[in-house]
Image 1: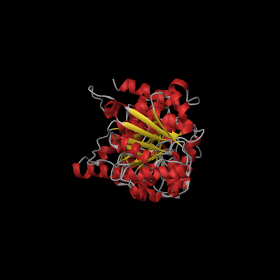
Image 2: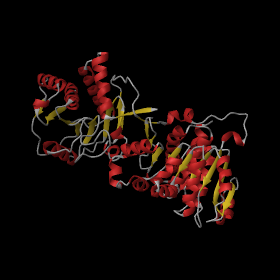
Image 3: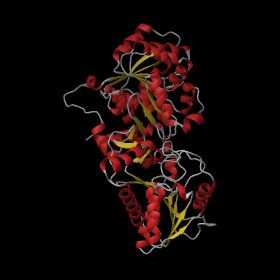
Image 4: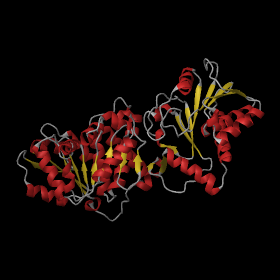
Length: 497
């Protein structure tokens, strides 16, 4: 697990390290500057002529210290200070005094252009920025972006909100960002992740005294995250997945979800689908158990038997919004005591009557994309995009569900638990059926006895990793949802041995 931090959490850890543990803030600032200079040297930036553009907060103090260390390497470096000097932090004020003793060029006004500088260090704003950038700050960002120089950002590119990744008016586009101690949430979400360039996390000695409220995974953890498979087992040992999916002339979603569940390790998968899909599904996936129904003639007793058979239920892919979908969803929510994954058209049906959730006895996972989330919450897509994490967390808490909000960086919010922010995957996965594969992966993990909250996070991560494998094999342009299942096989083959 890799911790992801908000601005307020990082400020707390900074203060705790300095005030409670006793590691002086100036020492942390010096270590931050050393980490920046090391990166400039290791990455072979062109240091023929360097500008360090600083505000008067502690981020600016880091920048002034960087300039001093570069001067000691006999590099031509100039400091540009922006803002009101009366607002200088104690440490930044001290760093400026030290720089003056070293006879470093310090300008308190911006140049007409930064052309001619080979490298620019961005130390204007740190992680505390919470307002739209204006005046000299805005002008500085514009000049830096127009300069043509390589830009290294300290902690976060100036102009990016550390908590949302949103651009606050305008923002630095960096070649690289060196952030300290822990990854900032704004560096994991778009557009912040794009503007940050290559992200390096530098350990400067900041102590974390409590868990954070957000996290992600990295590939070295995967083997330990996967459900364990004992040797003395049978197909019943690895769970039973009921996939309620499909409608007339729409059986692909059912196939993708069912196959993904099998490929993830489920012991048995049954598809409950309209009669018209029987032959084609059986020919595509002979391993599946098929229980067809006649549209508009749902046998409630039969459906109840299927609910009682399952270890986990998927409902919604390719079903269409209809009376049958509503009636089946109502019965599943009312009678199931095993986890339920609600996806696609079941979400659109639920959006018409959100009170159905009140009848649920089981753990519920909802998997909306932004359009479905807009229908569920009555919020605009733009509002949701600008507040991905808060929207998912509020919805999960209000409805006591696990909310898997699908986007380029998918969010998994669970009531009273830390929120997962996914970092795997790529834009080739923006293809029809990819979401159906995700529901199947999560169902396969739950069938193997992973708790629903863990299965949701791991399922999203695995789904993205499988997409990355597929992108490397066949390109992002050519990827199909079925290729993600093939990538899943490759990932599990390499990690589960």
